[in-house]
Every structure is written in C-alpha cells, then in structure tokens.
Image (cartoon, rainbow, N blue to C red):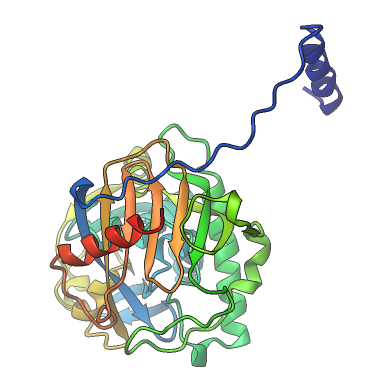
Length: 376
C-alpha cells in the first residue's frame, strides 16, 4: 500500500463512526518491578575476556595449520560479534581457503556462533569444536544489552586507526542485529529504559579497583542510539531526583543462541564436543584452517597473558511480562533488563576485574535486588 493510500484508508476508518470522538489514552506508567529476593530463580556467572589492546583478530601459521585468532572482546562480545566475524572472515578468505572447503571454528559462545554463521553465509562448510555448548558457555551469562564499547580497549591503545576499525565493526553488527527484529522468539528487541541517579548526571562515576582507563568512543556511533531525555518528578515512578529516559537494543540471549544453533545445523554445520588443551591440538584437527574463538579459554589454550578475566554475575527474577523497560542505577552498580526469560539483574563486585572465580555469590545478587527495590 502506498503512503497516500494508507492515509486515505486511515481517514476512512476515522469517518466510519460519525459522532464518535477519537479516544487517545495517556502514556502508560511503567509497571513496578517486583524486586524481592525470594523471586530470584537463577544466578549465573560468566567471564568477560578483556584484552587491553582490543580483540585479537589475526592469522598465524601454527603446527602446520592456518589459525585465525578471534577473541578478547571484553564486555562487547554479543554487541560486536557480527562485525568482528566479518573481519575474521576476511582473514579466512585471504588465506586462500575457498568456498565449499570445510573449516574449523573453536568455541560455541557469541563469537564462535556468529563466526560460524558468517563463514557459512560465505559458502564455507563449518565444523564447530567446543568443550561446552549453550547454556553452559560464558556468553549465556551476559546481560544482553547492546554495549559495543564495554571494556573493549584501554585508552592508550585507542588510536584513531583502531577506533575507526571499531566503529566499522559496531555499525556492521548493529545492521545485522536489526535483521533479527520481529521474529517470534524475540531474539533482538528495542526497549525504553531509565537511568536513575542520586546526583546530577555530570557527576564523575567511581572507578572499580584495578580497572584501567577506557576511551570515550561511544560518540562515534551516537546516531545509532536514540537521544534520551530528562524527566521531571511527575513523569516517572522512581524515588530518586534525577531520571533520564533512553532507548536501547536488548538481546534475549537464550532465544538468540537457540536460533543461531538451529540456523547453523540447518545449513549443514556440525558440532563436535571436544576440549582443546594446547596449541598442538590444532594439528590433530582434520581441517586445514582453524578459527580460534576460545574467548577466555585462550588464556589456558595458548598461554595468552594479554587476556584479563573479568567476572560477571547476573540474577534472574521471575518474568514480569508487563515490565518492558530497562533500568540503570547510576553510580550504584545496578543494571536491570526486561528479558523474556526473566528480569535480569546485573551488578559487579568490587574485586571482579582480574577474577575468574565462577562460584555464584548469592549475597551479591540479593544486595543488588534490594538496591532495586529501593528505587520504587
């Protein structure tokens, strides 16, 4: 239907009931989050593979194989995955590997799955090797907020050339994520959200112990994020003086992982459950080209000391379908997302940087839920 036809049809609908005025309801107030610790149904811990230089995306000859390394995305794995996979694919193609050839991908997290799908879409046959598969991978414990600049590089390594490459990856990923909007399982959705603060938004944020300086590169992709707005006291339900509204992409990670796995299998992909323990294990694989998407596992597999583990813990509350907004408590280390598998409550601990302890800390999550309750 052309735009003019749509306007005419809309006018006809309005005229179909003479004497009846149009009833425009006021905007619905955000539903209250039921922030009770007895509604916690799961606590998950994952490790973000932070690398000060940014992700390692480079090819190497190793034990008779061409190995394309593709890991070290910090807290931006899901967000940057597709654009980063395109860069890894370019190295696969530059190696001389031809479409129709079978290649190996190591790792079944966000980077491994999207790299495997990107290679399949370019015509390669893919066999995926992994110690674990979703939901028993670190990527399953991610929050699911589109944050392509989260712990991706330190300020000293964010040159103009590096930043331009990051921007290209972020834009390519954003475009690909848009193609998953509107699907029945809702792997990718837009949600409004609120940033709540005790003080003004110009107040500097505290830095976690031991963390480096991160560059401010978000302005390079400001056009991909709708501009937020400050709200007056009567325009929100929160018990804090400073509130801003924003709109952001959210990944429903269980649905996204399942869809990627289904698409991978549909296009002939194979998964072999196998743990690689040393670089010599690359030589034992039948494929001549290997894409190493081991994430934090590269610390042990390759002895890569450039990786720093960053512990992340999330708690899920019983789903509330009526809650369709995200919530960030600024300077209080609290992020809440309205995912379909539950209200996801994320909060970092003081000692999470450099920490690879996978044991859940229920007290940490309960404290985060109690901070959430205090916002209403």
